Image (cartoon, rainbow, N blue to C red; front, side, top):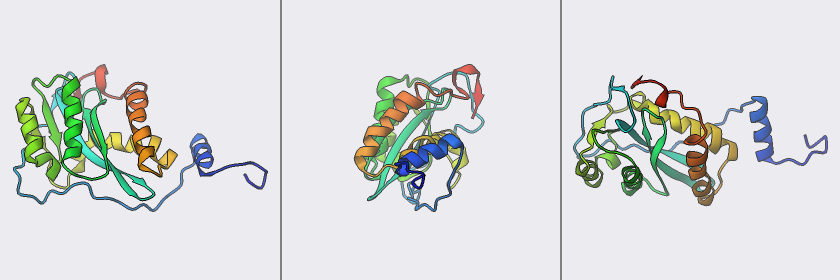
Amino acid sequence: MRRKGMVVNHKKVLKMMKKMGIQCRKRRRFAVTTNSKHSFKVYPNLAKDLVLNGTDKLWCADITYIRILTGFVYLAAIIDAFSRKIVGYAIGGTLAAKLPLEALKMAIRSRNTEDLIHHSDKGIQYCSYEYVDLLESHQIKISMSATASPYENATIESFFRTLKVEEVYLWEYETYRDVIERIPYFIEDVYNSKRLHSSGLYAPGRI
């Protein structure tokens, strides 16, 4: 492109590659977000084979990382398993229990928690006293997947894949500011508002 006199940078190349359906293979560093080796109480899986017929019956929660030039930023998110929409999220620089707790508080403020199951992995953040106390104070049933079984929380994992392929990898965030400016926009104005959700309000679904 430059030999033809075109002024380009890596972002323009990525946009053109996406338009043309061309993908590149990258070797990526990974960040571990789940620590299941702890002494906190764990809970059985209540979500397996659950048939859903409405929203706010099952929330799925998890944490992912977003790579920037200086390291990682973390996103805790909660998705409604029926509508496939994000109902709570929080962004932070560490994996402290406060991160998913803020996402949970956001979801509780705006949604109906009556007869609700909250499903997550057995990570220390979700088993912490503060997190469990907040769930129990709102009579939310607690469900957890088996250790090393990411497919048991596939709904939120699917969202994370969409987020990274359609947003994070395309823009290649470099700073923390990039993350806090772009992620809320993608979640609220793109994913929740405009994206066609394959399950959601169209028909009852099985988890």
